[in-house]
Amino acid sequence: MLSSAVPLLHLLALGFAALVFASPIFGHQYQSVLGDGASASSSGISAGFFASLERLSRLVDITYCVGTTGVRWPFSCISRCSEFPSLELVTTWNTGVLLGDSCGYVAIDHGTPPIAAELPSAAHGEEQSDTKSGGAIIVAFRGTYSITNTVMDLGTVPQKYVPYPPEDHEGGVLPDEPEKACTNCTVHMGFLLSWQTARRTVLPELKRLHEQYPNHPIHVIGHSLGGAVGALAALEMKAILGWEHIIVTTFGEPRVGNAGLVKYLDRVFGLQDEENEPERRTYRRITHVDDPVPLLPLSEWGYRSHAGEFFISKAELSPTPSDIRPCIGDNDSNCIAGVDENELDWAVRLGSAKRSSPDADSLLSGIWPIPARLKLWELLFAHRDYFWRLGLCIPGGDPINWDKERRPAFAINDEL
Image 1: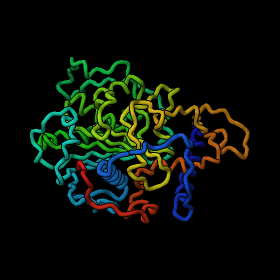
Image 2: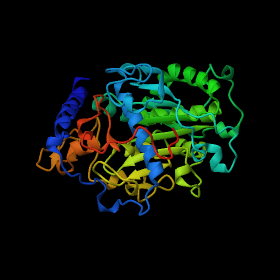
Image 3: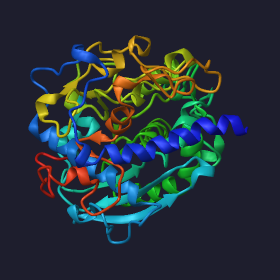
């Protein structure tokens, strides 16, 4: 037990060192992990859709105040809350590291009505019955507390995933509808535990809000671990509860389950239809050129990436609409989902890693044999670089953001 804990303590120390190297004093240009082969589409995405994703990234950044300095009613925190005057806090939750490390908030946006293109029925050519209801419901999941927890999360074994209604759903009766069946599906045990714990707080509030505002879309957003938990939450809302207006946006989401679960999620959110306009998708999985987390857990462990990806090809902050590529299918070779981690010049070895002799080209030999030239702090912080550097609850967010162009409190053509 002690020997297995030592590498994790080393990683925690590295995380502290990374905070130093990430400061503007040590600023530097990033070198892409994926090499020159990863390039953005020449057209990128529209300015309006870019503004929408950027706004959602700031909303998910606020989750890092939950469990630290806090988020308070009406919607107040020491970080970015003042940028969203139309939001009203409903509840927050913080389960702690022993109960799945889940943390986040539920809020109601009383602002601009959602645009038709963002509603699932609009993608199928159906007319909206009420476009004057306005606003949106937001449920936001934060990432994990520490590097140590991330490593432990990615090291757990998968378990069977059965999307049946729990006891508080319809008396626990197994649904007969074939679209609710998930055949040969497995899910990451830690991610499922996080959602099962958080749902005790989240679902009752969402049910109440959904009844009160039946025409409001529900935006599920998450970063890192929060993206994986958000995926499972959204699956339950859409496939089991039958809620239609579910829009999911995740940043740096790790792989959630096996090929069976990927196929199921793609079907539930209509991601298998490659002819659909990418910006009309109701599941948007944002990845970053230097972020290795969307490639974890490894495919050798049975995990796969699902569709809906939008790939940020620019390594350094801040990206532009032309830097973001809409990806096709589960494994677009021009995006991070199509990269075989065996081809990357780095490897993750946990527990049973064979200790090798130290040399100048290796960092943490025998723990994580990552070539030093890849600069571990780049890999760590690229996982936080989604429009802004996420994950630090202080005024203005992470200090590296302070010299970036300030965004308006509203978004062009935004769904919120």
